[in-house]
Length: 111
Length: 113
Image 1 (cartoon, each protein chain N blue to C red):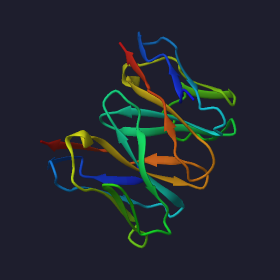
Image 2 (cartoon, helix red, strand yellow):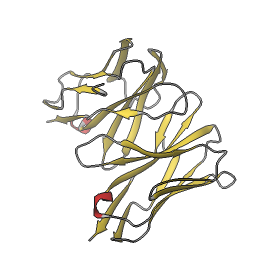
Image 3 (tube, each protein chain N blue to C red):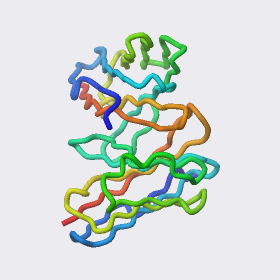
Image 4 (tube, rainbow over the protein chains, first blue to last red):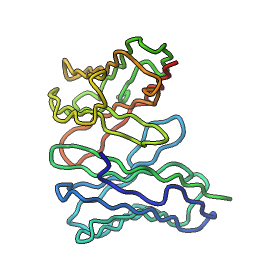
């Protein structure tokens, strides 16, 4: 079922550093690309999302970069904080609302 | 709004028993999703509904799994008979419209012994 590939599987970053998570997709029918954040014992929650007609979207310390021709997108977390430690999922949605997730990245921000 | 409500939060059952997971989506949402989360396979989409109609159930692992949405405010995921490999956290999510946020419930942790 895997149609969205995500890397790395885990990531350790020092406080104040930049966290970068990458994703790639194959299905050109996808037209909405959200990122979700999940804390232990909780359901995933939307962090930030982008549409394919935009190359970059920034919300606070979180930025999505989108490369439509390469079918790749990435999440950058600037000035990473210990409170950002969580599992991050990229996802892709098509016009029928089918929402597929990547395999997840476990981020640990060390103080 | 209380968000997406799932019940039970935890379920422990014996192999071979029937298990029913329940979900109440956010009022007004017209799409509902069932996911299974495990360490090995991540978040797998099992099935999703638009306007109470199943659109894609290709992620349902076997005939032992079935899902229904009899109305806009309730859905069930049933496993019969259950097996130890079904142990996972099952999430329900709902959304309204296209290109919008899907809201997740707290999940049901299922353990089959």
